[in-house]
Length: 373
Image 1 (cartoon, rainbow, N blue to C red):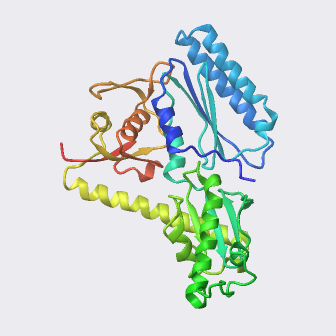
Image 2 (image 1 turned 135 degrees about the vertical axis):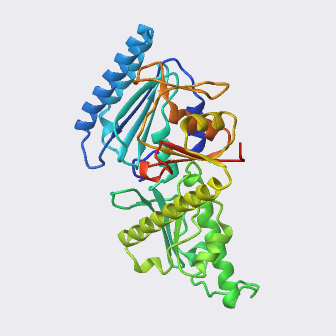
C-alpha cells in the first residue's frame, strides 16, 4: 500500500499552470496523517466560505459559485477521503473541475481566488520532495519502501517482483552452471545478478511510471553497480545507501534515506546560491520584483527562487510583464510572485520554491538571468 501522498507530476503541474477560468479557487491547508480529519474539515469549510464570499463580491455568476460550493461541500463530506491524509492538502476547483493533492510538505492555510490557480506552494513539493522510494536490494531479497516526513516506512508490494537472484534465473543457486557450461565463476554470477536486476527494473516500471519521486538504492557492491547499469527509472538518486540492506531494519534504512535527501537538497540549494553570487558579478541577477516579472515574461530567467509563503497581490501584464500591485486579495487579482514562477516554468526555466531566508536579497523573489540585460 502506497502512503496517501499525491505528489503531482510535471505534466499535471503544467496543466494547472496553463488553466484559465474566471472562477478558479486554490485552497491549501495543513493536515495530519494521525488525525481523523475533523479539524481539517472545519478549516476547509471556513476557507470554502471565504472563497465563495470573494467570488460573489467579484460578481461571479450565481450558478458558478453554487457549483464550486457544492464541489467543496462534497469533499468535506467524503469520509473515505479524510481517512487518509498527508501533511498538507491542496485543492483546485472551478465550476466544472476539482483536483486535490495530498502533499508531504507542511504548508500554511490559505485561499486564493482568481482567473488562474495559485501554485507556488505546490511547487515546493516538486522543489524538495521529501517523499521518496527506497529499493533495498541484495542477492537474497528485494523490497521497496516508501518514505514520507514524520510517517513510518511502508513496504510496497510489487507484482512480479523476483524473490531473489537464484529464483529469478530458475536456479537453486547463483553458482549453478548453465547447461552449456558458459555461465560459471565470478562473471557467470554477475550475469545472473544482471538478469535478476533487469527483472526488478521491469517489475518496477508499471508502479513507478507515473511518479517523479526520488528512488534511493540501498545495496552493496556489486549489486549496486549492476542494478544501476540496467535501471530505466529516470529519478534514481546518484548516491545510495551502501552496505547489505538485509542486516538493516526498514526504519534504519528510511532514517539514512532521509538524511541523504536533506544532504542532496541542501547541496542543491547551496549550488544555486553560489551560482547567483557568481552571476551577480556578471550583472545576470535581479531581486527586484518588477524587473524579474519583465524578464520572466520575455523568457530571460534561467532560475528563479520564490518565497513559498508570501503572497503579493496584483497583476502582471501579459505582453510587457509590467506589474500592478494591489492592496489586498480579492477574486480579481492574483499573486504576482506566483505568476512570475508560472512564466519561468512555462519558458523552460528552473523554479525553486523556498523559505524566505533562502531567497537572496531581502525580497520575495530572486532570479538568475540567461544573459545580462
